[in-house]
Image 1: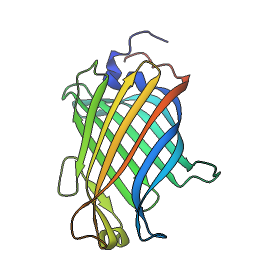
Image 2: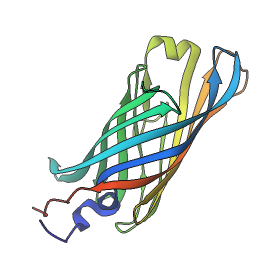
Image 3: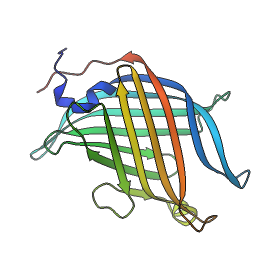
Length: 194
């Protein structure tokens, strides 16, 4: 393996397995017919891969798996799978993921190659970084925008994300937020550049 991780840009610092039990999900709770807070623990795995060539575009990325459990429960209430990607030529980070509730999202944003924090966004009306969802969600809880702010300080990962929803229960957009602080529990090596 190599100590040169520059081809992964700011994603190099994420490679590995992370855990955190201080998560807070603020969302609409249908059982209560009202917003509520859910404390959670989560694990995230980022496994390096690449390069991926699209014509002249060269991407490096991380396979991504995430699961979150309400504190004291054994079955996850939320999971995601997808990819985080670095496009060095554009200076863009991207996060593409699918949620098993029937939605998929590609968020992105500019970042310096050595950034320790960055923001990714998606908008339902965007051709560049967008959101798709199933018919039920479109009618009842349509995601119209997404933003994720992430920072890494050594073996500590912090994120704060907001999904803006058009919900049938509200006249105004509803902000569904999630945030957590995770610690790295295992590191994965970055493959050498090609």
